[in-house]
Length: 353
Image (cartoon, rainbow, N blue to C red):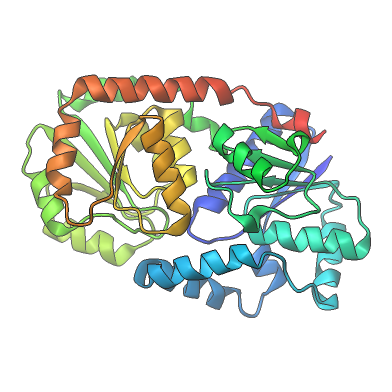
């Protein structure tokens, strides 16, 4: 069986989701041939770099405008399907001899759904929703099944007219490395608590210099900051905070996450479920992207972390109180273990066979 996974490099979350889906399919059924395609690059080769640069600029510099565009896109879901695009998808499916398509980015769902309608194609289309919030842009009439992170997302889809037999609660996909490895390296901590700070693949560190100064002043806490692909930020922080462990982009986030007692990050769906798999409590500072609000509320509602909503609050003091509260951290870890136990045995290939 040849399975094509379509995604996009909007941050690194959707790419990581695609890689996790591929890993799961091959683990469950090694006879499957699975390919990951950057759909934006394939469909728009001349302007894909500009599209990604525009996205990065909006997220990092104009989040309000990004949220407005995101809301408008949800109200006007669907894509204009020109003959040129249809032929490109013809070629894409033929090149990979695709028997099924799995998507990890909403635009992909819209294009493949429109393609199926225009070509009267019956190729199965499976959509992985990578946030807790079921944004309307994810919903496409040609979708055969939706895989969602939580019952909350399932109920949202039901309320929007999606039939129950088309929804499976699978958890948001994360690589197997985040599951079940445990804390083998705890002995190396030398009695120190570990705080991991991440801002996603774009290096959007949700903190100020004053915040980092406060954390670095605690000799009983080891702080690691992952800046992602933001090399400029990595150099700046390394110079200003020599006591902190500052690293750039890494393929081994799972190792850092499993060592950590607390993860300070943005409320991305992929990162949230990576933390759940690792049983690492979350601390979310001032969510500012539209799709992250639902994820943040999920974190609060399941008591697997703390969300700081007040833009004027002292995040450093709040984090230090949490890192010193062993009882609350242990409760959060147990809640994460409970969530994880309900999804880690989900078998994707049984749903798409």
